[in-house]
Amino acid sequence: MRPVDLATPLLIVCSIGCNARARSRVVLDDARATDATFAADSDERGDSETSAALAPLRSPSGLYEELSLSTHASAVLSVPIGSTRPRPILVVAHGNYDRPEWECSVWRSLLRNRAWILCLRGRVRTDVPFDDRPRYSYPSEPALAAEIADGIAALEARHGPYVDRGTIAYAGFSLGAIYGPGVLRRLPRSTELAVMVEGSASQWNRDAIASFRQRGGRRLLFACGQRGCVVGARELLPRLRGAGIDARVVYAAGAGHSYSGPVAIAIRDALDWLLEGDARFAVGWSG
Image 1 (cartoon, rainbow, N blue to C red):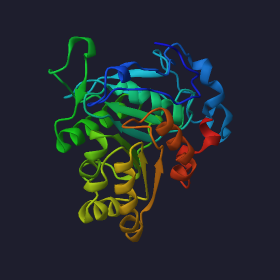
Image 2 (cartoon, one colour):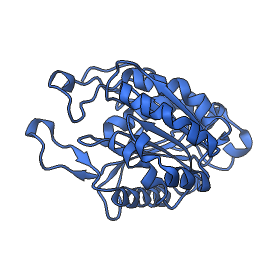
Image 3 (cartoon, rainbow, N blue to C red):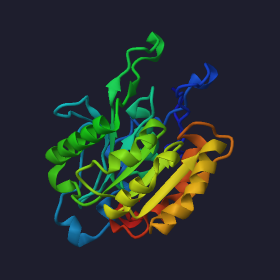
Image 4 (cartoon, rainbow, N blue to C red):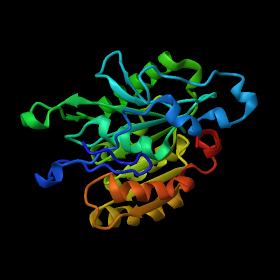
């Protein structure tokens, strides 16, 4: 795999329906990075009062850990290296025929050390050509919600004081976005912020909107690379705003069914708006 500058959020990934040419991938090659690589992005630049409370967070495995879950397959965890205060959790749910490592890499490039990024694996698909294995999916909304709860419990058990116990954020792509509204109402924690990439506009019915708002939902970002996605999301905006949810749509025209490249750049450009008002994600704490 050809390495790319970590500051550039690029990942070309094949999803269901992609052709053979699209199967070539450019990934963020940050596996070789060490704790020192991200020292400038850590809490070591932050508040001395909170820095005294916790030693700067280190991980023997570097930027990513494999997180064992009690009743599900292991998750991929992006570690907020250098943090000296509890960090919030971003839960990431990938698409069908996908892998958690790929999407975790993109979100790591966007958030760096602002949050724990918990990327759920799902269940392995058995109908995959040998050269494409392994690929994963989520069988249902309840199954994904249960896996997320298991992942949060495992994260808290491993990293205890470094994990913020307040609301979480959610990002879903394709199937992960389609399941999003139903999953959010089933989670043990409320979700203030959510990003739906290439999916879910039709799933945000009256009950889903009301549940999200009642459980503390504050901001919702739709990110699209296809016209059908952006049309549906824009039509939904008045209902969301009418319910008191601040919502936006970003569109990378021509990007296709992807969360990478131009779509990731569009998400990056909307992050200040999405995270505004939540000091746990403040840039001053994590670069």
